[in-house]
Amino acid sequence: EVQLVESGGGLVQPGGSLRLSCAASGFTFSNSWMSWVRLAPGKGLEWVAKWVANINQDGTEKNYVDSVKGRFTISRDNAKNSLSLQMDSLRAEDTAVYYCAREGSGWFFDQWGQGTLVTVSS
Amino acid sequence: QSALTQPASVSGSPGQSITISCTGTSSDVGGYNSVSWYQQHPGKAPKLMIYDVTNRPSGVSSRFSGSKSGNTASLTISGLLTEDEADYYCSSYTSSRTYVFGTGTKVTVL
Image (cartoon, rainbow over all chains, first blue to last red; front, side, top):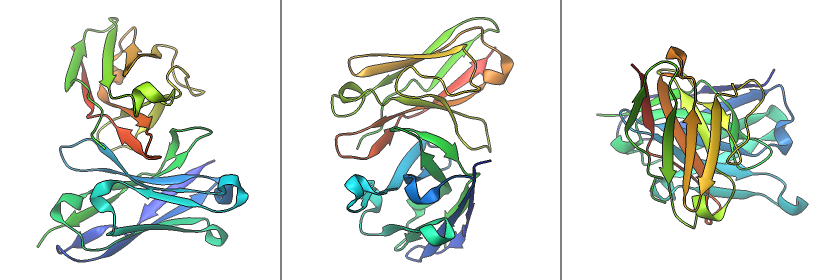
């Protein structure tokens, strides 16, 4: 059974940092393309970042939504089947539930974690 | 990276059919056959309902169907059930090699 379990959320002050983790199991993580997606209170889903593995067998690709570029960093540890999101210079508008999502055999998300809540407030 | 445009709410009676639209641009919806749809109940994770415009994952009811014309994609739910009451989001791959979601539609079963 495929499982994605996020952790690391919490309350942080504006300007602070937080690191989210996503533990994956039940599939070959090293060959999977992964993303982070968030849901802010009263708003809709927003794609945040992605890690595309093994493009042409010669590297990886990381992309971010404009609003987090330079502040968030996506990374992964294939040995630990883990995806991470380092969030720096946090703002109130980053308050959201953050989901780890697996990209399916195409450009869509076929598996999601249960989410972890990040609250940025003084 | 503007969000795709969806109606804020759509409602229907049990047994009826409803359609949710999702409008983007030639750089996302119109440029790729990569529109997907997600159902999200309050406090739950999103669930994939349609991928690649028209395909249903295993286990998703055939009452859910998708289509696309130009820059607008649509999700149709036929034979509406009370359990279909949820938020629905479309998503598309973009020419910037990123993803964009729709603004979301709250479906209410009257």
